[in-house]
Image (cartoon, rainbow, N blue to C red; front, top):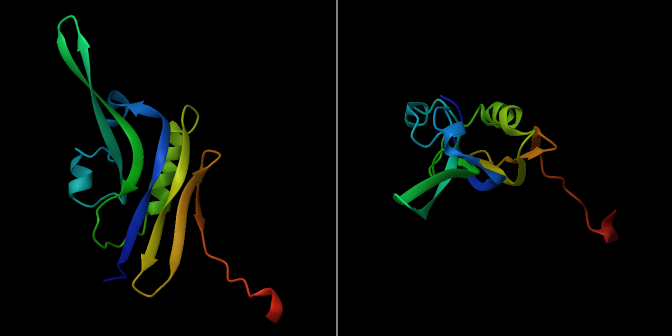
Length: 132
């Protein structure tokens, strides 16, 4: 059965990844992998309209990595999935921000891509100076 968690936040991508490089990945918002919950994150895309001689062109690019859904889910493979994205796109793109996990049990984690590597962080408890 497992423990559900709520995931929030986003990891921004700079420069954005062109649609042709993400459309056929399991992390594409249009991928059947996303619909079947086989991935724990997905790309957030941004559409811009450009006027050309032949009419309007819609340009779609991946601008961020976001949690799979606003609801709770297991998310067991989130670090692995972020690692896959980092491995494929990390040399040509930089990532900023994090995705935060709050488990039903109260555990907290943050996930980020730092220097091309997916990382998991746990919070640290720091006692006030007067009681150390």
